[in-house]
Image (spheres, rainbow, N blue to C red):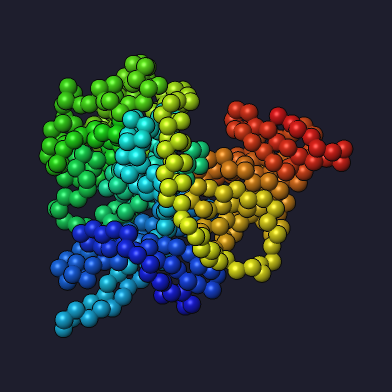
Length: 457
């Protein structure tokens, strides 16, 4: 353990074949933080030995590479700590590895994509509406892009391995469970054993493909998940990789969006859009990897505009809001407990803060830009477009993306995904105090001048 850090187990969250997950509280000099402690089963270490160590090492390497980014990509679960615990099992002393991961609280709708889909189907009689589906697919594609950029292929993307938090425009979808990920620099493999979720894992993970395994393998999973998000049904309803291969090879055996009762109303009434999306999903789930889009971002770029064009207010959205509010009122705790996440005393003044649905935020301070990752403040790189020490306003635009404005009302889009992008500044310099909208469409900036408040589109 890091000196001064300890973990207090609170309750078990779940268990799998190789590990048990606990909700724990990470105690450190900087504060108290809820985390998920993923601990290998001792019997797994006795039975599997090197293979179990390999799975945990792969997850730690994959998430550790992503942790080097500040701000981190919000669409991937963050690694907090890693270590090992020595246990005496009979006459043997074995080291049981563990990972401390970001705790994602899903609230009333559930924490996994699978749970949120079940909530949507039961409460609104439909899967995700077009706007919500677009946000979900963008998040997952963004997370995959970040994973691929650091040389990692996930290989087991499924509705149970996507975690969710937040609501409405602030809803976030995070990729989790890197136990069978393949990372460059980790040469050990699982041999000829087939891993992954049938119907979501790419055929080349089980059967030989000249192109091998790469980012295009995760694109196959993303295509299957896109269909699930839109319909609430598995694209390939199979129990084995062989069954999935047979369905993927066929053309008449593939499901169509409009044949699924869970499709939202705005898409049911638009056959042209459904046909276009069906074709995109078919391309993303081709048997051969070289016939698919090679990058997750390329698939999302083609698919999301079709959904965004149909992102209208719908009855399902109203039903969802009513259901969540009703459930929250019934589950509301009688007593609230407070914990100190970070002690006072830092030599900084926070001027503006923009919070995300996962409890992380970017702030402008008297010392420059800083990022709260859930457990500590981390210095965020400044920009050439906006003077970081003088940044006055931080406004969240979307997952991992913010608008910055400095004392001279210079504006830039700041992102964990790409280089800062300057945008047109107001004609009249002002001290920005608030903003709202989309800088690529219509953004309203409220600022102060010596003459008084000014409102500039």
